[in-house]
Amino acid sequence: MLIEGFASAVTDTNCWVVAPGAGEQCVVIDPGIGVVPQLDEVLAEHRLHPVAVVLTHGHYDHTFSVVPVCEARDVPAYIHPADRGQLADPWSGVGAPKGTPMFGSLTFAEPEDVRELANEDKISLAGLDFAVTHAPGHSAGSVVFGLTGDDDAVLFSGDVLFAGSIGRVDLPGGSMADMQRSLTRVVLPMDDATVVHPGHGPSTSIGRERRTNPYLRDL
Image (cartoon, rainbow, N blue to C red; front, side, top):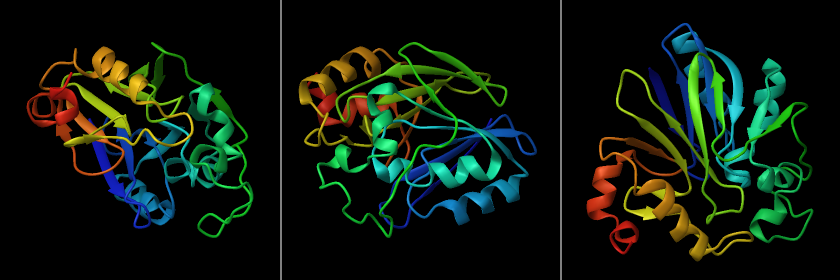
């Protein structure tokens, strides 16, 4: 499996590109602010062909480039319905007045093809099987994506779980009680060897977070 990640220079949000290998179809996860040039470089370097964009949640620092990425390649975007409205109205997700300029943009829209995710969905994209688990807390529509195969299990955790921390819960739709339930129900049962690729910061593992992350230790 080929996994390439890079961070937006604006918000340090990780965008992930996942494929069975070089020269194959791929999936783009969370294309944030200003990442299109970096994404194009990764795709060219590995000769990859996107078939979909999947979104861990609706906050604009994870979705800002979804329209140009989808429209340039005529591919769908996947998002949980509880966060779908933020694609065209990102202000609602961060509690900002509607119409406030956001990094040079005043208008936002959905991609032409948006497909909604549900808890315990299994979606097959680019020859990979993604397990979708609804994990609210950071936002109402936060999800995590699990992958299993010949390698160790992988989790794309969005802003649910970071190395040493968790996503903030003080934005509209956020809830510490929901976050604690998601961590207990979704994260803690996972195998220690599971590699975690988060929405911000370095990658980690479930075992490391179980031992050192104060939010998991408290649970």
